[in-house]
Image 1 (cartoon, rainbow, N blue to C red):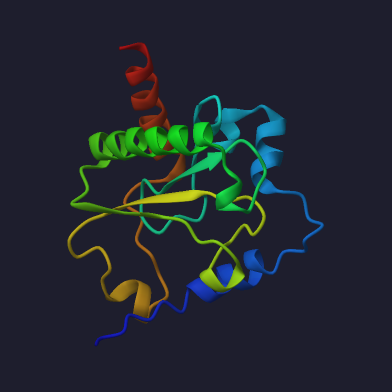
Image 2: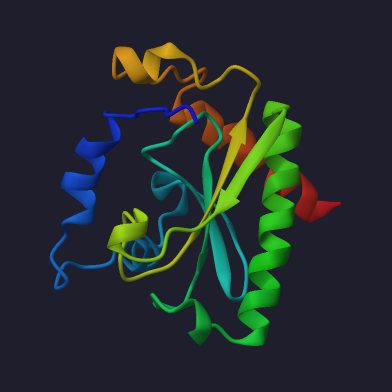
Length: 167
């Protein structure tokens, strides 16, 4: 079995995962600010929302987050589960339209040992992938190559979410 090492990830783990349990939740804070554009919230639903990952693995890396603050997957209601599923499917379609990836990683990290960057508010990651996108740069030079800036990606993705809402 080959191993792919990503030493650049440790900086993120040290600074984000070691948050104090008394720290405010970043997702709840951005919702309370009610400034979707600056927080890069692309779409709100009844039970969840879609937001850009400000520390993306690849361009177009989005998160689908329940509105309700919970770290327990089993605590989500049937309505929340259903809407999260529909929101993830829509988000995958939007990313597909905007970035034409060859594949996706979709999932969540629950708990510190699983790599959760936000311990107390669960969320799904939807990461577009392209053949050859995990090249030597992130391993050897601790560098990720982002093909597009967050602001431009946010504008394109938001426009596609809005287009789908009106059709």
